[in-house]
Length: 145
Image 1 (tube, rainbow, N blue to C red):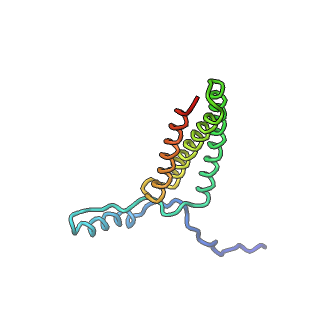
Image 2: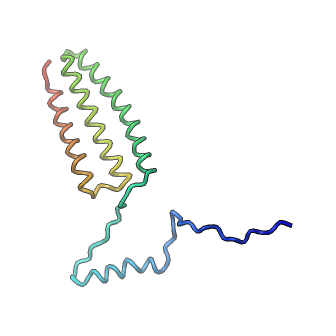
Image 3: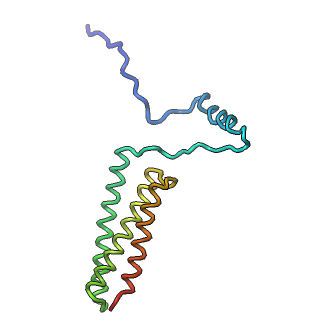
């Protein structure tokens, strides 16, 4: 007869765990301990690190969006040239539109997936790139005919 394997498999940490009575009381106790000064500061619920799976999904979304934005930018360039704009002005306007949309999509996708809206180290540089490309786009659209 075959013997039954009575060894327990290695315990893995599940991704989702139902809260127990101890975990329900822990935030309340932490709030009481922090209320000595009269100010209750909630702990951050933002993730500390993005997983490689989240980065891969976000990168895929941004690449698909970049392809769509490139098609929009080339259509804009074609329409501007047919409308009487110079070729260089149409190219710079379409490139600035592409950069603006790409930087905005990076800000939105990774800000949402990684919960990075509260991280100044993420929002500030990408936000500055978005504003810079927006200014460049406005200058390019009002360029020479």
